[in-house]
Amino acid sequence: MRNSALGDVLKVWLYAIASVFLGAWMAPLLYNMGKALAEVSSVKQTNGPLQWLANQCREADFPQFFMISLWCAAGLLALPCVEWLRVERSHVRLRNPWQIRLPVGTGAGNDGQALVKNPEAARHVLRGFGVVVGLFLLIMGILLLGGFSQWKQAGEGIVPAIAGILIFSIGFGVVQEILFRGLVFGVFLRAMRPPMAIGLSALLFALVHFLKPAAGLNVADPDASKVGFEMLGLLVSAFSEVKVLLGTFAPLLALGGVLAFARWRTASLWLPIGLHVGWIFITGIANRFTVSTGHLDMPMEFLFGRTLQQGAIAMFGLIVAGCLIDHLTTRRTDDPEISSNP
Image (cartoon, rainbow, N blue to C red; front, side, top):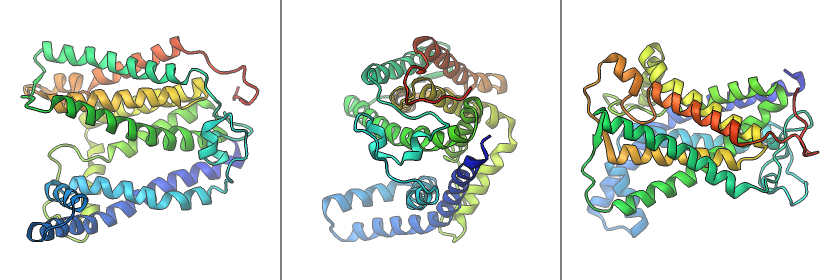
């Protein structure tokens, strides 16, 4: 590791930890505010957007408010974190679109790997999207044919549902890639060799996404003042279960590694954006239109999981995706703006 950049790596980890604790503290406040809005809207007429928000708050349970609270906390602390990293706004040429929007340090400094303009941006987005969606459509088909999952009753509005999932996938995937592979991975690449940077950024990515409460996980009293920390404790305690570590955390770790590798391989965010959007889209489709049969014993649950993003087969699919990316791309070493690690 490079001692001059170790401080920034530590700051990124402290930012993540601070966001989690602030989000846990804010969660009951956000929950009570949301439920209060829902109650008021039930007896008083409100305008369209406010009524929509009230309806969403009425239907949401505490785990959903907990997740929103974590993202709100991360947003509140983002600007102080950037200032803490002591980076200045970029003055580079306009031919690099990412560095217009991100701090100089985001694209890595002299010892890292700068983000560069990608002439194959559209192709990389489509290629990443196609690789993930194609592989996991195949896996979804295997699960359906094998009787490990089955179709839900779709009902009406299939096309709007798919369109909504796609729009959410694009928005969420782009934002996460700018944060994780643009900012965080850029900081890590300045401090360490690429393999370690890929591994640690994948670990941070997996830990953050592991904080999403699993289906059925809830708290006894969502109105309690410290209930956010109770939920956080439940999530942390899940690390003691081997089934959870291997079935849920390991695929997240593999996903983070593949996305970081794609970013390093191309010196661009376009390929990881395509991969990430494809992952969110296909898992969203599977969660919306299929359901586990619920007849899995322990070995089968470890192998196939209860959702498309769980189990050894999901991790295998992501590893195959990484191998395909390695085969279909060429590492950017001919650009004078890239100073790669040995």
